[in-house]
Structures are given as C-alpha cells and as structure tokens.
Image 1 (cartoon, one colour):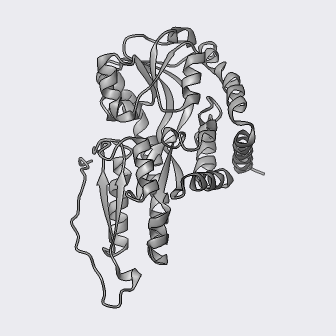
Image 2: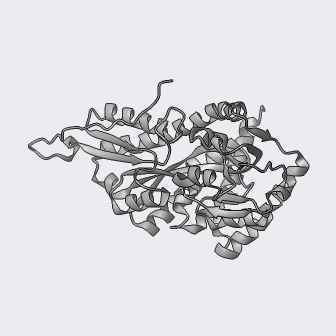
Image 3: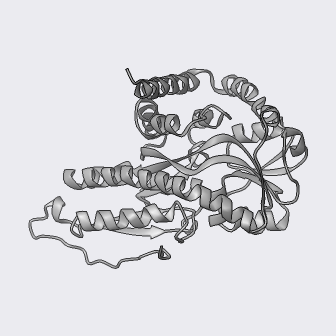
Length: 347
C-alpha cells in the first residue's frame, strides 16, 4: 500500500453567468487528529472521500484534508464546525461530550460487547437519530452524519507496569479522553485518571505525565505510541466509537444533488474506516508484539475484576444524567440483538 499523504488541491472556482448554485464549486475541509499515513484510520478514509467526491461531482466539490491536529484537538474542531469554519471532522465521543455530556452513556464499560451490535446501534437507526437531534439542538450547526469504529476495542496500555487485573492499576496514571465518565471509571478501578488531548499523548507518555492510556493496538502503532508503551491487557472495556460531524450550514448551501452525494459519501467513509480497522487490528497487534510489547489476554477471573466497574458506572451515570439515554441505548442494543438473532435462525 502506498503511503497516503495530504493532497491540497488548488482549484479554480467555477461559476456560470446564470449563477445557478448547482454549477458553483464548493470546498469541503476535513480536519482530523490522526497522522497522514497509510495506517491511519482517520486519514485513509479522508483520502477515499476526496477521490470519491471530487470525481463524482465532476470537480464541483474540492476536498482539502488537514491531518495531525493541524486545526486543533477534537473540541477545537467541533467548535470550528459549530462556527462554520470547518465543514467536516471526525472525533471520538470525547469530542462531543463537553457539549452533550449525556452521550457519555456510550462510554459505560462493557455495554457494547459485539461488533455487529455496536455497528447496528451506532451507524444508523433510532439511537443515531436521537444523537443527531440532541447535538444539533445544543450546538446549532453541528450535524451528526453517522458513527463508525475508530480503532476496534479500547483496552489498557502501559509504559512500565504490566497490568493483569484491576488491582494492578492502583496509582497508575492513565490517560483518558475529556469525559467525566471515563475519569470516574479509571478512578473506580484504582488508577489515577489524567485527561490528555490526543495530539499531546505521545509527549505525555514520553515525559511521564501519564503512565498509560485506554486505546487500541491500531491507535498505538499508527501513532508510534508503542515507542513508549510496552504492555497491554485486552480487557476490551469499550467499543471505540467515532462520529462524523458536518456543518449544517454547509449542507444547506449545497444543491440537492451535491448534498445527497456528500452525505452518502460520508456514510461510506465511515464504512471504509470501520472495515479498515477490522483488517488492520490483527496486524497492529502483531506489530506491537514484534516491537517488544507484551499482550495479556485476561482470564475470566481477571476480567471480572475490570467488569466490576460496569454497575458502578451505570449508577454513576444515572445519578448524574438520569435514565433517558441509558434507556435509549438499552433499547437499541435489544433491537440489534433481536435482528441478529433472527439472522441466525435456519428455520
């Protein structure tokens, strides 16, 4: 696979004398925090979207990609979309939690335990519709297009302290996203939660600001965090959900045909990212080990020490935010399980 790099196209605006909107050129800027590399699950889908939209629109849409947190961290880029200076970004839940903290329900550990269920819940359907409405109402201009997987499953990775069960986390400084729920989960397990922006994590690990993080192998390897991280325990406490956010104003400015093209393109972009991560996960695990890392798959007994945090976090969440979003999530999970079970029938 060739090394992907950012392509900054300098197009010439096309405008017909009639001024018809469908003949104008539009620029879609996509900002993300990942590196501009062939194994970056943020950048590879961006390169795909650029090719797709520019070719399918016959040049009426130009896509510019800003990788490696050039436009700031998750919160910065959400705010840029809100203000209308950025058309598209992709964030983890941490990017939107400061705006709609109730959505931290997705970070309750061990709620989503299966890829197919997670994809049905987060890519389309009533839960995504409810998220879209809530975020748009709160921000005024940030529209959720769809969800994705942004690195498979979140587990604990550490620099110097091997972790086998929750007791091993005692006092370990673990990087979390900017999510009070994640902070509370690490605290409950005995760790020292330390929120650090994604773009600052490499330096924080190297300097000792944090001793570990809650991520997946692909995130670790593609961002060279394994230069500092040496141990992993695959407790898989959370599905690494990502979300694609667009400027509502930008979408409203597009003619109907281009609006449909852009929305369909971003939905497919999420599928590209999700499938890319499935393909790359095993490769990244092997690369982590080949570079000297140690991976521990916990026994049922050891995993139970981590899973003890689920009920605590459900109570913590409902004490903070009530049951509305927990009920929505449980209903979506139940519907997904029922649909999948029906597909398993051979009668």
